[in-house]
Image (cartoon, rainbow, N blue to C red; front, side, top):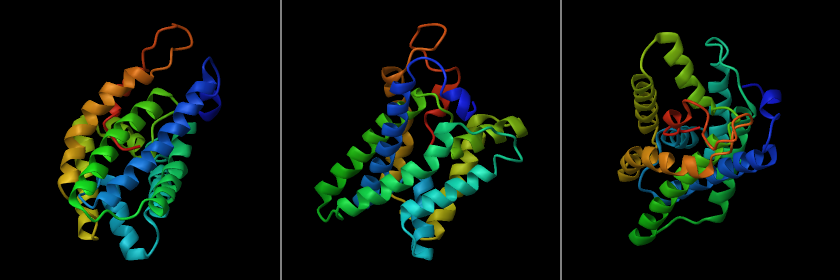
Length: 222
C-alpha cells in the first residue's frame, strides 16, 4: 500500500485517528514496561541495550533502528505506507515523552501494575493501528518480506528475528524478565481480541472485516 493510495476511500478521518492514536498508545505502553523494570517486549530489549551503550534515549534508538530496518525493505522490495513511516517516529517520541512523565516504580505492586497495564495497552494499540490499514510497521514488513523472499513460514521468520533481537539486546544490557515472557504469550490473544473491535469497514464491501492477512501480523511489534 502506497501513502497516496492509503489516503483514498471512506473513513479516512477515523482511520487516521486510529493510526496515530494507536501508535502513540503503543509508545506509552512500551514506556510503562520500561518503568516496570520486569522485562520488555523483544525489540525494546534491543533498544534499551543500545540506549545504554550509546547514551541516547530509548525512543531515539527506536527511531534510528526503525529507519535502518526500513532501509532493509529496499532489497526485499517492500513498499511502505503512511503507517510504516509514521511508525518510525511516533512510537519513539511517545516512548520518550511518557518516560519523562512517569517515574521509576519502587514497590513491587506498582511495578506489576505497570507491567499489566503496559501489556494490555499494547494489545489495544496494536488493534487500533493495524485495523487502520495504513501499512505494516518497519519490523513487520521486514518479516513479511523475508517470508516471501525465503519461502520460510511466518512463524519461523518471526521467531528467528525476535530471538536474534532479544539475544543481542540482552547481551547489550537490555531488560529480559517475566514481563518479556508474559508479553510474548499475551500479545497475540490481546491483539486478536481488539482487532475486530476497531475494524474499519472496507470501501467497497461495507463490512467491518480487516484486510486479509492482517490478524496474523497483529502479534508483532510495529
